[in-house]
Length: 138
Image 1 (cartoon, helix red, strand yellow):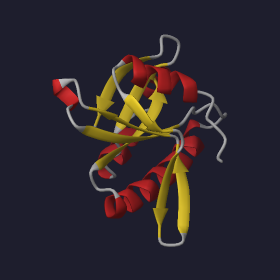
Image 2 (cartoon, rainbow, N blue to C red; image 1 turned 120 degrees about the vertical axis):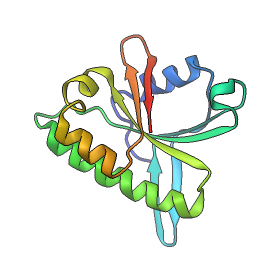
Image 3 (cartoon, rainbow, N blue to C red; image 1 turned 180 degrees about the vertical axis):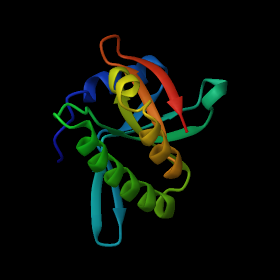
Image 4 (cartoon, helix red, strand yellow; image 1 turned 30 degrees about the horizontal axis):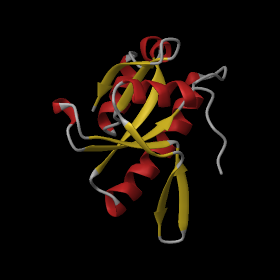
């Protein structure tokens, strides 16, 4: 099994607090001979705003000295997962879960917003201290 990200439990709790049911922890993504693991999968059937929605979450902490290097790694992983999910489970939406601080300090930069938009990276922004969802972007 893959190692859990430092923020794994905070993201999981934020989803649960928002009414999501965690359906897998971790979530296996398989395509042909490749098997990878995203951090979480969940579904929500109660709230009107996300009724019947199935999600897959990849959590990234961005704690190294180079947020750009962390972003490069996260983006590559996200795009691979997205490609495989689009073929094997197209009903599931993939989100990159990040902390509110890195969202404000790094993801608001024009160059980063360009890449996020170009590659259609959906973000789940979490207040890690309060374990609350701040924002969904897609």
